[in-house]
Image 1 (spheres, rainbow, N blue to C red):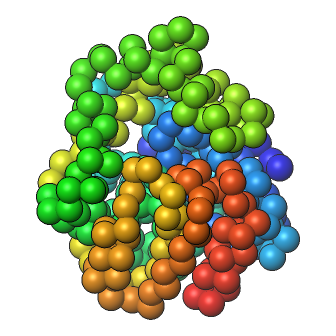
Image 2: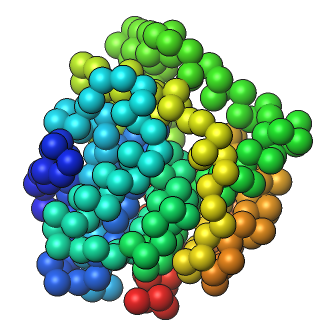
Length: 277
């Protein structure tokens, strides 16, 4: 596994990569409250298939990419970071994979700038329009999503996550390998990181909820034991993808798909990227 930094858009992003330098690029976007480390066990699967797998700590997570203010964390800015980071390593088109908040950024980027995305693999989070519809009309999803408004409040969620040596954050990773959990905690407890990463929620506006329909080839992987994301929006996502679409369900698995099922997820990503060069 290679570790390096990428300078893009006046910021410096911490990155990791695996696989041949001349292989087709797969960009992997992590979620909250995780880090690029969530992909470390998926990346070797992609590398073995000849892909160049790259993940980076996104805006707010990388110490060198932590601008002040909520507006700096709007989903369009986050998507533009992805394009700029890929360009810095020589790619203007790439396979895109996103989990959790990384999935929302990936949906947005694929909708707004489809020419940059060869194929799209989404993990856990439905298309934003399907998600918004379920939050508005499905009581089950409304209950599952109730935490979101709490995360948008100023200062309080930071204090909750970081109190008692970040006990709440650590407990969120109870299912994960301690090594991966420790890396996520290290990134999120860096001074200023928790506020910056929660600003992703605070910058969430109606434009994200109105993400365009997706025209690029799309694979959506969802697990039916995800406490935050129910079946209604997952199944409704098909209505917002106009390109080739595949929906895969991981039964009995929680939200942390990349960490808990890396080989199975990696194999699906390889299939998706290979089918749509």
